[in-house]
Image 1 (cartoon, one colour):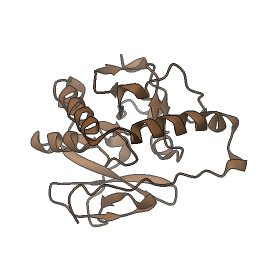
Image 2 (cartoon, helix red, strand yellow):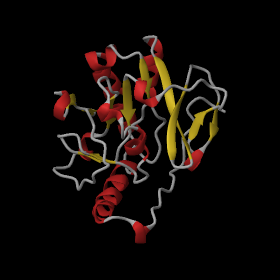
Image 3 (cartoon, one colour):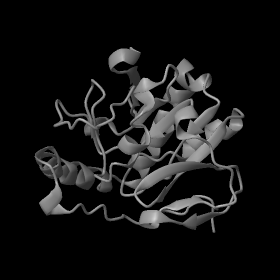
Length: 215
């Protein structure tokens, strides 16, 4: 299997009749922003991905991180591939998410490693790959559908990142969640739920900035 085989768009269908009001309010915006990012050309996607990696390279938040959780983009998400290669070039350990039974963990991903199709048809490291505790990551490069300047995040609706990092507020040293996005994904406000995990920073094709308490 090739190193960065594209992943087909996956379904994150929620049970509509069980969704809280906050989730229902997010759905129209989620559909709109997903359509916008899917409409980007490959040239536009590549330009954003390279710009994001450039901003990361010159920011201390990234340069001091040794264990970095990344992802392989799908459905028009900001491509993390240049950032992954940058991590390898700088000697950082890279990890990719693995989902099972509604939970997300991370396995190490080294240059040349083979991948397999896992939950939601995403590519993930093989089971033999070493795992690493999510709450001990230095930096988590996080996909998103929408975001606010204050760090509120609109995801795909599965809640994997919210659950995975729900307890890290109690830790003295907690992972930094850094959202990767196209600049048009910024919105003024987002409906939030008590369990929603906010971003500590956001990087787009235009800039990288800190949010909330991490400023």
